[in-house]
Length: 317
Image (cartoon, rainbow, N blue to C red; front, side, top):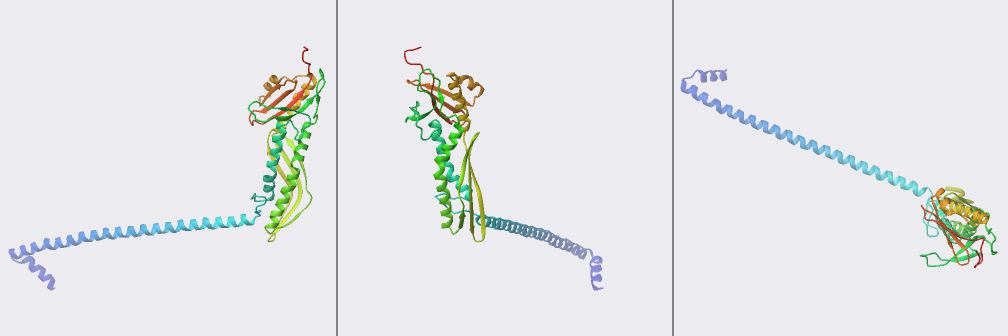
């Protein structure tokens, strides 16, 4: 009641008093407006503070998720590495580190196969040839002992095929060349395994060589059982594949020999029209020997061999 009377007295008072009351109103309004502005600013500041804290929380959660993902990847990698190491990695043997016996045997024997092929191609299909013609090609430093694949010592006579089963001959040459290396590779493998604490049990070794288009296959049969820490691995067959074109080159050489023996001639230009993948060259020496070179255009592999046929003595014809 007193507050109400005071308010009415202020309103009903004389003009001067009313003016003073009226003047006090803007002050009150200003005071209220000032507090309102401060309140709005405080609200904005509160909202701003809230957004910053919320953003900080989000970033913190993202960082935690990223950390968990990295930890999970590391755990998976460690588990995979553990099983790989436990899954039969074979120790070093003979200076080669391999993951399994097949890979070791492949890396040990294949270089010797390639070495045998290189010699056979240069020397006309024989490693230790007894019937040959020494010849040096232009641009080469050494003479090669090039085997006669078709030969006669008589004049006017056609040559006789010296290797009627040339592919079979090449298989035997490769087998004889790598035989000791095959045995040594298996012995080195077994020795390396035993040195690393493996128990090794093995049987007899046998192997064969197959010449196929664009490749040589070495098929080896040997029982091999290795065990360590309760894990047992058993192997019976070991196969090696060496990619090369010796088979294809030999087929062409056989065709040349066949025609030289029958017709005393081979028309290489016509043959290359039908088989453009081969480049065939021939060189005639002073003693009427013909040196043939058959090159695979793509791989640049080349077989060289000699032919002496239908020789006409000097001064005749």
